[in-house]
Image (cartoon, rainbow, N blue to C red; front, side):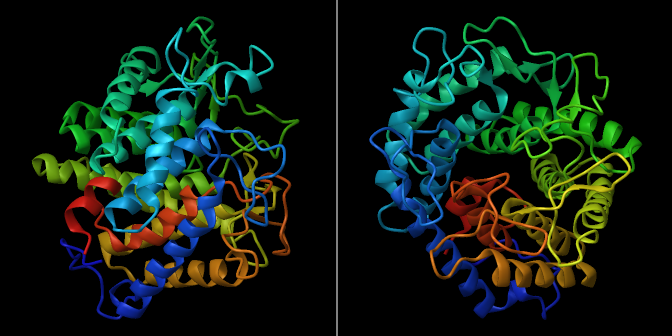
Length: 422
């Protein structure tokens, strides 16, 4: 892939400029795409086990379906065979069986698999991925994608976006009553990615403006006040819930404490947002760069440097002491993406060093050359573990880590591939 807007900051010696490294990234991405094709079910996609197979009791999962649709739609534009039918399959499921026809919005799974009212709640985290999938599929001209994006945006804007707060609300009961008394950094972080994609796909700057308002609150105010160690959990009055899920430290979406992998994920999102705003009108707030640098430093200090065996650990407490020392694969992928983004933006040699160090760790510990895919989680000693994430359900984070270094910081994924891939 030839980057149409090469960064003059990248030194000639950077791995990202080396043709062998770029071919290696492509190869790893293609391996991941092949591995995850078996996640297709009659409806949507389901989570794979460690062998790359659907377990006997597998059920369609809407987040997995949306993520797979996003990935395979973009892979379609790159000319990878077999990906368009998978993207179409995902769009069909999101337009039909996984959608709530009575109240609007999307279930987390098939309604027959949802046993309680809690299971049937409408989640911002999920809806952000439905929007992202629809936006990417629109760029790839996947059948049914435009209708999905129109409906998803209407639901997302009407129910989840809070104009007063400049963030997304968290969840509602299935009929949109009973708003949850919670404001979460995680779902809002993924909402920023979806907002930037929509802004590019629809040429709608209002979504880019919303993307800016979210980190302005969560990062430039709340995160900066805490030394860029980003608190995750708040109530609707914006009181930080420091003991939230204290009894559930390994929760996969809302763990107790803070998540250094999110510090670095915010870091590269801020750089992408800065680039998007500069492309839009030539100006962007200066704090996007300074906060991105500080977030990366805070994340690597709290997450990577606390691990004696390398890698980014899962969570820390408010004194930055490790809580869960296990190392999810997505934390490594987001650290890698942040290092690449900062390298492109600044040209500083320390980010090249981090970029190589993180890939070395992933290559030697995360990439499963025996069974395929990436190991989703390691323990503190870098042995395969399933305490937080069983199986190998997540293609999205690992695959994006192989593609991010090859693309400019803006526009967003699908739009960039459509314009620049070669």
